[in-house]
Amino acid sequence: MATITITALISLFFILDSFMQTKLWELNGSGNFQKSYVSPDGNYRADSFLINKGGATVGHQYRVSVTSLTEKKEFHDDTIYWLYPAIDEISIGWKDNNEIIINKRTININEPDTYYNWKLDGNL
Image (cartoon, rainbow, N blue to C red; front, side, top):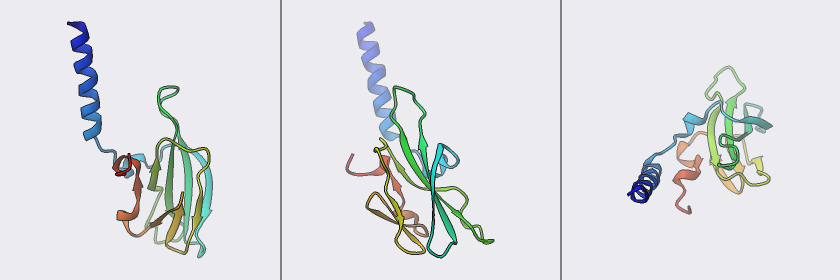
């Protein structure tokens, strides 16, 4: 009986986890700062963060956010990229004033449809 209960609870956990979606904005402000990358025109700064919220049970995660450096303040630590598990090194570089390439993925900071959330990646 206990085995069935434990099995049912584990199954329920995995089913619920598969339906739960973490929104990128929920990650804003989290993680340990790693490095900054300023856009070519100096209007934006992309910051990379390493998130470690599980100790030995959960691997590290990478988060990249964008902050506006002008008075307009379109962005303030807005997450545009979230990767789990974190790879040894993350590759970040601005392609132009509005597009940034993170691990070979081009993200237009003005088009949220291009933001990357590993939980929504069809290659999982």
